[in-house]
Length: 146
Image: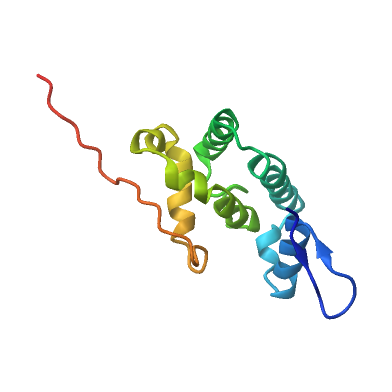
């Protein structure tokens, strides 16, 4: 199902990326689209990934591949576009929420970088909105096996 935004002036806008980018510009929050040409390209890349892979992926294998891809990408990054919070983080958060809610504690630990990123984004001011808080265990409990 493709989202459509009816505007007062001109034709409606179609598509998640188009609508989101339009709303970002209208709110004068252009920094969410990236500052440099490279950042803008990376944001666009993740928005495309969100629409083509996350929206399209429905099997367990698709989900595992997505989480694995993200986990590797986020290994040395705070946000999807590096060190800046962007629209890609927001839309990916919304796309992954239903997946993250259903992960076991062990799965969350397996995708530790995704879990760290997701927990950070869900606590970013104004992002979570109506969605439930996904709980992550902060302390690992080790037993002494000796």
